[in-house]
Image (cartoon, rainbow, N blue to C red; front, side, top):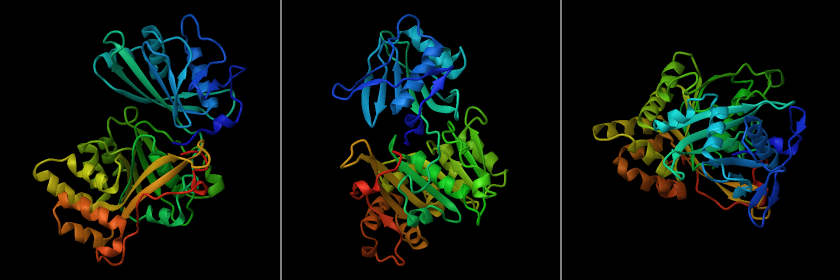
Length: 401
């Protein structure tokens, strides 16, 4: 996750300067500049969110009957204010979701995923990714609202620590490229950096179709007049423009794209659609939650069962070009910085041929051996691979991650 550049400048809303929180690192608490008393209002919510931004937070958690929490430099901090009542969380939901039906939908066991924007007096809109779900508070009707502050700029490959060789690895002519990792490991930022790489490419212009839930990076800070590239991206948001990832992929194939980006391959329908799109000659990027290359391919296969598992495993292997998994760790010399560790494997024709000669449940062992040392397996030419490695502070992300 990239920290927003807004933390480096003054933000004003309705003519008022938004102050940062007062931070106590020893007690892991932050305090608003003004005490929030009385009925919590929608303008107060907008000011609260912007204070989180200028303080440098990356995530915010509201929960019924609790004080808010923010994630600051990778650590959780308590916001010293009063506990949020059910009425407060109802106000927050109505403002963020732009509908009075949010509470009713959550009470009906629906999980809400959407985006929210605030337009300050100057500069670009500030965007937030929101998840809202029912939880148990003092009674059974509590709500938890998790908010990710989205960057207002698009990173380039250097910003997220990608080398030239890794950029080349992540730009095959077709097939499936998977960027994996845990929540908050920077998957979306790495994928956005690759989109920027394509958008600024003048020699090989492409048409890009992106399907997200929600849209995180808008790429509006990459003016065509500067790059001169004819590359164009069309972004569709699940739940706003299209009903599902699978519907988005089917629609994408009729839009004559060169590259299809699927925000997350999270279920059987989406994985199937992703693989099918990559088998039609398109270059397809997606992300998933996994902790290693071997675990990534296991997760893709495990969404299917019975005879379909073997059939789909062959399709997945045929389509795969690269799996890259990443982790973020605090910097050694500067704990306010973060560093990236990456593990990846290039699925060359020889690698796929070797895996196809084995049962799918044996693939993880071979994959781990290939990543550790491709020369020991007797596959030539050797696939490009890397295991998770220790890095030093000279390799940290320039803007967080």
